Length: 172
Image (cartoon, rainbow, N blue to C red; front, side):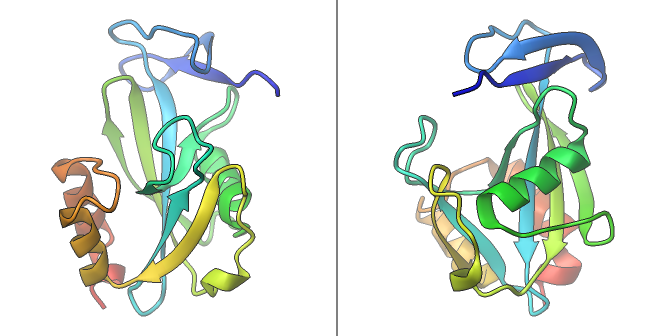
């Protein structure tokens, strides 16, 4: 397996010219890396969610967002497009993959993207090493999963942003 490298970003989210090896770099105060999440929403407002593979080191078997870390040299759009295709087999371009917002986390900048799709879950090409299953849920079902702890808890601020910034689509 190849070593994954991440660009180290400064407080403003700008590349510093240095890289970190995934899992082997202690981020210092003021150092960050780029992570992307992609929310797949159907034209009728349902949300496509995925359950992580049991083999994943981080959050195995949990229902969680589509996405991951940007690889050194990738911009946010490229990372989001790559993750969406690798994990679910959904191709995207700048017309359909829309930037939603950026959140600053402890050691990362989290860029959130959305895409409108109605591809049936059974037609997705799941990356077995990353994704165990995927399914469409209504906003109500999704909120219920969050309340019951059945979906990874990214925090209240995160979910408020998701629902606020994607409301024109999710609330249909």
